[in-house]
Image (cartoon, rainbow, N blue to C red; front, top):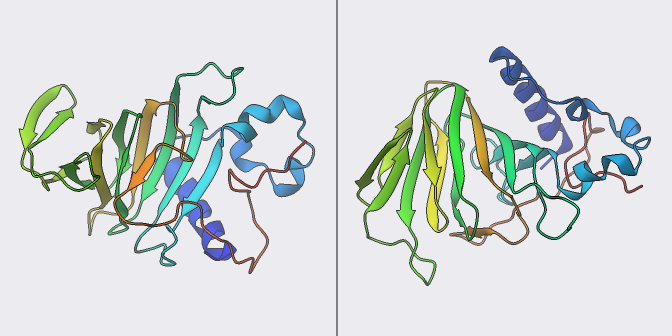
Length: 225
């Protein structure tokens, strides 16, 4: 991805979050220069990859296949001093912007439409070999528990949510004609290095072409103390 794409996506994300009164923490707005002044008291942000996370999944077409995330809080299974067993993220999915099929080996998560447009989500159970299962999918959504056929696409409107269990393949996008979607994620501790299983062999963190200076750093770019 070009840095200019990342800067534009972040600027648009801040505007959308503000429109729906979702206020980000102060570290969301630290410049690269400010980060150089932050000591070890902020290692929880560095170690647990809090902050901006924007990906095109290695496919080089962010507006078609991509996702913007901001991790607000997270634990860390690998570092004993961090005791949180939960995580929270803000996600933004544009109209027709697809997050590819994936599941998590361990993490259970709730995905909540906080504002904006409608979120479309397609679901499959996984087989032990990592393929799509033809078995019906168990859906848990705002206190309602029911089953749908494999490959069903659900529409979540603002205020609605869905629980995604380990091993449940999901792909989602903003419904065309309804605008970008402001999405919340509340989950068990998140570990992108070990807990994601994508259906296709795609990337996670993008390679960045530095065509302009960053306005804010990505969560994997913080300078060490």
